[in-house]
Structures are given as structure tokens and as C-alpha cells.
Amino acid sequence: MRKVFWLVLLFTALMSNRICAQEQVAVFLEAPVTFCQEAKVHKMVDEKVALIFEKDKFEVMPLAQAINAVQIYRAENDMTALSSSGWGRYAVALKKEDIYSIAKELECDYVFFVRLSNDMPRYSSRLFHSSAKTTISCDVRVLNVAGNKYTFSKQVYSDGKSTAIYMGAPSFERAYFKAFSKALDKIKIDTSTI
Image (cartoon, rainbow, N blue to C red; front, side, top):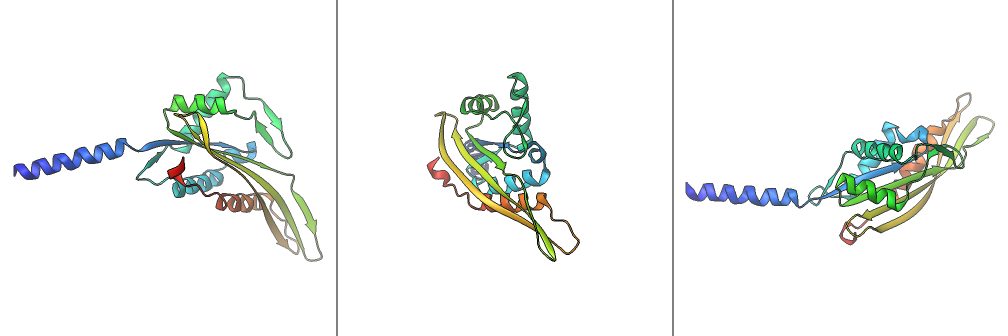
């Protein structure tokens, strides 16, 4: 009976150390204001993060918690004004020092930072169909908080298109999501190097 007790105790201690050893990852998302709070964008980012950061090595902070921390930081540092860049309105861009400060406050080990921007929608019409097209720029970085340095940085461009037949109207939103999905598919990160 004692052996079983000690085995259970040992197993519990090993599992608690394993759980504590997980590194914390926060996800920061910057996108045009019309898409930043979009549930579909959050879901797409969450799915990509789950593929990159394995659950046995990393614990990913809920996106809503990180977004809330960024909003509070912006408000406290007078960064709430909106600016126009190409097509869409953006909050003032976060700099590396801002990302680092928020990450320290959240007590995370890494920040997965995604900044989206897109050009103006382009519309075209043919005899029996019309389409909306857009190009997305997806800037992805991973900040190692302990070293205060980017350990991954990549900018990806991707096109999206939505087509409507005959009397229908193409959807810019659908074109945007297609482009964003393609951009996320191009992001590959080896977490052993971060």
C-alpha cells in the first residue's frame, strides 16, 4: 500500500512540475478596426496558434485576455487614436517596447504578434459575374520576453477573391477572410528555435 501511495505522490509531483514548466504565450492582434473584434478572425488566429504552440510545451493565454491588456495599455498611454493606412482604420501601431511592457505585465514568456493590413478592395464585373479582390499583408513576429528580442519575424502577402454570379454582389469580407486564411497557412514556426 505504501508503494502505491509513493508512486501516486511521485506521479503527482512530476505532473505538477510538467504543468508549471509550460511556457506562457500571449497573442497580440492588430487589424483594421472593422476586423479586429471579429470572432472569425479570432477563431482563425486561435487555430493557427494551437498548431504552432504544442499544448505539452506551451500554455496559450486566452486571446480575449491579451486583447484586453493591449486595450488598457493603449488607453493608459494615449494610444487610442485611430489612423488610416491604405484602406481601413487602425489603432496606433504597437512598438517593440510596448509589446514588451504588456508582456511583462501579463507575465508571459512569449508574444505571438500578428499585424494585418489590406489594400482597398478591387471590384470587377464581367457579363455574368462580378468579383471583389483584396491583398493582405500579414506581419507575424514572436517576441522572447526574457531576452526582449524577436526570435521569429515574417511578412506574408496573400490575395483573396469573392465572386458573385449574375445579379449577386461579391463580398469584400469573404475575400478578406480567404486572403487571411492563405496568409496564415504560409506561416510556419519551429518552436524549438524561439
